[in-house]
Length: 163
Image 1: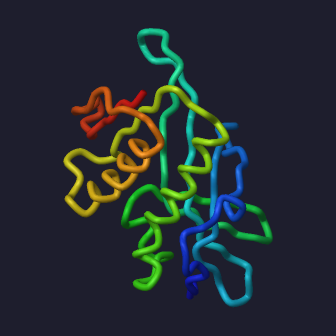
Image 2 (image 1 turned 120 degrees about the horizontal axis):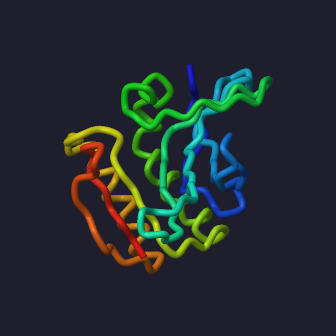
């Protein structure tokens, strides 16, 4: 069983900047762990660089709940509710998006992207899922980004484009 380790929004110094498996910048912060310290639950945010169809450099923003096997240094990130559910206790749930948004703020400061694209992983996400995306949008707006476009992506998910 995972025990909540967070009781306040993480300070920037508590958020680690690293690279994901594909080399993209990634921010993580610990939210919960097992009593033996062998497993940690993390908020994970990545900014994946890409060039869009018009030749513009952008970053795709992805976020989720990561589960880290400390001994093997193996991180598995879940970007959907069902995948994350076993690792997020009822008392941790209210902290997840607070930690994700704190990690996002830290990653934005580190990477300083000029254009960000986000898309939901499912078509027509439920309102609970959209509330999470609204929290991320609010964070981006607070950090000076402007919402330039939104709609339905070719994959059927909802997308947002910020500059």
